[in-house]
View 1 (cartoon, one colour):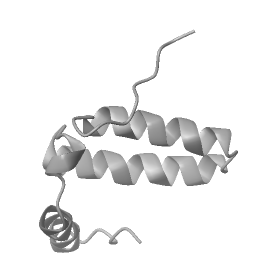
View 2 (spheres, rainbow, N blue to C red; view 1 turned 30 degrees about the vertical axis):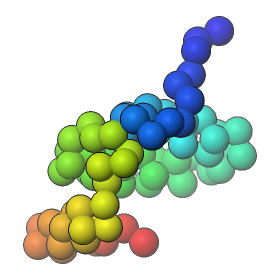
View 3 (cartoon, rainbow, N blue to C red; view 1 turned 180 degrees about the vertical axis):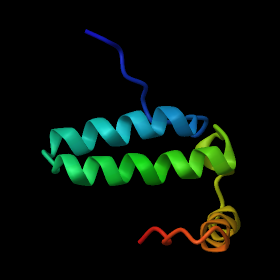
Length: 77
């Protein structure tokens, strides 16, 4: 069985996404919901890179939302 990362202060965004996806699947969220979450998280990671979670600030999230808006993409709710 594969070893999953645990959430720590220095957890990378990629590892946190893996944990989030596992949690969503365990909660049996719909495939469409999983697709939307994956798309939105991929967009954010392309924008910000694979940062440690502690480096993700509200200012970075605001810049990401503006980035989406400027490109005509619907903001993530």
